[in-house]
Image (tube, rainbow, N blue to C red):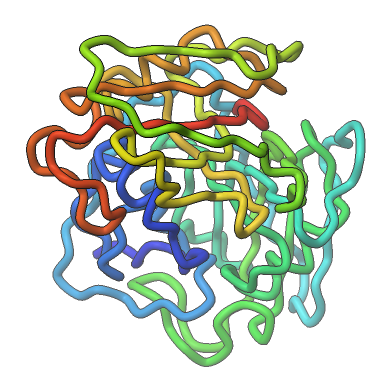
Length: 314
């Protein structure tokens, strides 16, 4: 048995189209193919255990994944949320609207029985604070944490799942204890800051064309990392904008791995640094090919133009 995927923000059509092959997971219970984490966690707001489902295959653990911590179960009954800094982080504390990217392990507070962890999967889990996509104990407990820190969250049942059992481990009325490593904090962005770009319609191209609108001065993106970015997509033939992630103010994660997404995006993002903005014209053969993408309104055999702003790297 596995837990359903966490409830997420309603995905943009753009993210769904671009990340469907990146996530490599066709078994998402809610029907979404956009989740970039294979978390089978119990942090969802309204999850129902899926009887008879097989365990999700573990992914290769990245060298950047911290060691899985041992959880010290609390003494006595957990009646209120307690957040303990096991390792102090640095920089600005999280606030509502930020996305906090964490690795985590969760256990029953009563006996330490583990029900989920992200370390073994090698994929951090992003939480948009204030979006109400995770249990209240996480929404409240992750406010004020800092990047690089490690925190223990002792969560009473009423801020977890209350009287609703989850899977084979979490029973009605269970308090839960998590230890989380804060991998990154990504501030929400202002939709008003979206780049003002006009695209002229043009015939199809045979090769990828890249233009740096802003050269970033931060860390350079490497294969195997997760990039948090904003994207604006246009039809290459007409210049019509078909989607933009700036509308929500939440940067979108994409795994920067070979054969992990549309080939043109992976090739086009090579060498980008945090803070950079890049325009790329992707030949249709490296975009949606001869099938197009009806959800985005991109016909078959149509080049794709993207403007990508690289916000953060995890």
